[in-house]
Image (cartoon, rainbow over all chains, first blue to last red; front, side, top):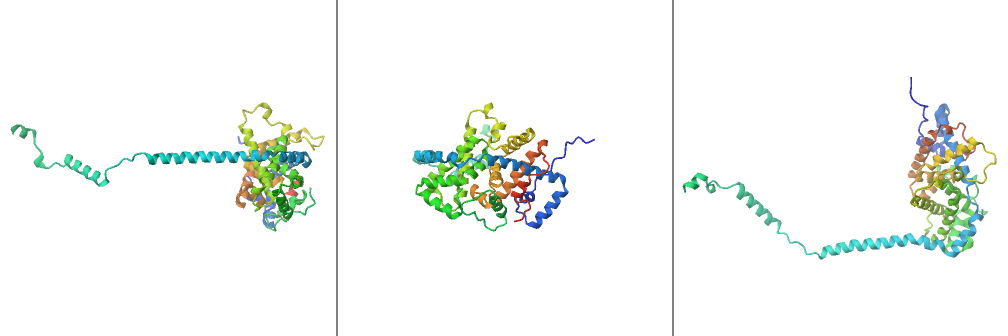
Length: 154
Length: 234
């Protein structure tokens, strides 16, 4: 016994999206139309999509504002110079923020240049010192090695 | 609406259906008139601003209404769009038409509105969508079945769950009937991105609709099928 729920409609394909837009070439559109007609699940899904978008569009068009509702308000706002200031604010904020960031970056760079620089010994001298130390510690010549007994006998 | 010539779309296959959609909805001022308006707006002519408001308010507000849902907000955003356009007209380079530029300003104003809503303190119960806020109150047939009304609310709820970028591109295409190249100009995207975003938006919407068993509505709207170029021919 199957525990699956109702079969979900197939996902929309790019071809179907172009079909909805009417941008498929006519021959392809006719072929796809035949395929969709032969598949009830696809057909229902497309119809459902169209219906939903149709309802959405109808409501959006009904929600449209009439020009006379806002024309006077727009002209009054322009007369008061409202958007000029409001529109300019983000620009000034951005300029101020950029200036502050620039000052911070330049200040940091400048202060680092003023610090006294540590003078390191040349790499060759470091290398020489290290090699000498290693040789001295690990490669002692046999004549330099003195056994404790010999030491006592001396 | 001004008695201007209908907008002529180029004879590209992608543009033909949209031109047909627009032809069913009313006139669109041609490019020459739009350029003239731009020149006059740059001179600060408020009478021209009134003409622009008259020409574009209905269509612009329908798209904003599809994006925002809140009727009061729609009026504010559309009003703000025209005021901003008037003050920013000197920054308009004229590479696109006034029509697409106005939609760009309106889409950005809608985004700003949504951002400002998000910045508000925790939502109260009044902020939750209700049938009254989801649906405009005017123009509704006086007798509409409860079932039909409920379906509308569910459709709007599904639309509201779409990410803003998807809702915007769908509104420009499905409500305004813009061609791909116009949507690309409004949203500053490539044609390929517009096409793929439309596809992803539709796929998401269909997925959302399919989760609601009551929205498996047999028999699509024939009016819409005609308007969206169902036959795929020009």
